[in-house]
Image 1 (tube, rainbow, N blue to C red):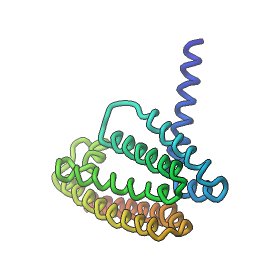
Image 2: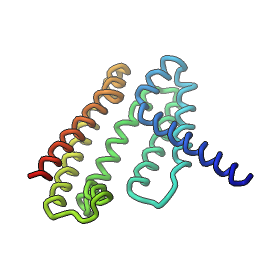
Image 3: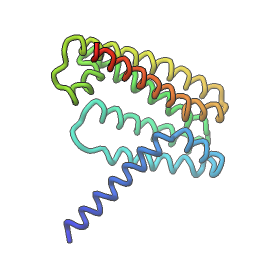
Image 4: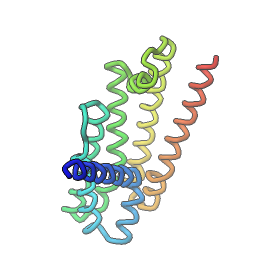
Length: 196
């Protein structure tokens, strides 16, 4: 009986976690649809709830990625709460800028205090990396830093422009396409280097 309850609770937690991750990934689309359908008075408290639940579901050992996730969730709570209290939709638009800034800090910090984040991720699947692979992971981390600077600047521009359709298009579509393109290019380059 106790095991069944624990199993149900575990499944419920997993489902909630998955829903929160999806909501955060589709954040720009959720904001756009929420503002059109409900307005800030309903959307902002819902987003506060999503980010608070996200904070409460972090488990396991503390790592830089966990710290990043928690910080991003705290930023989400702050922006959504400010929007709710001020009845101002503009505050909701700055969340993607904050996430890019946090990712830049994480990746940049790992360049100053090695190993770089990409090397750490690579060592999860291949613990023994040759020296040229270590150098390559450093370069890839630098490229991601440049990406987060440019992406964050464009995200900030879309916030300042105040056009919700442009903001949603870039932050909920184009930005993800560019990220996917960069990942695809990096994968192709890595495979060629591994062969050569």
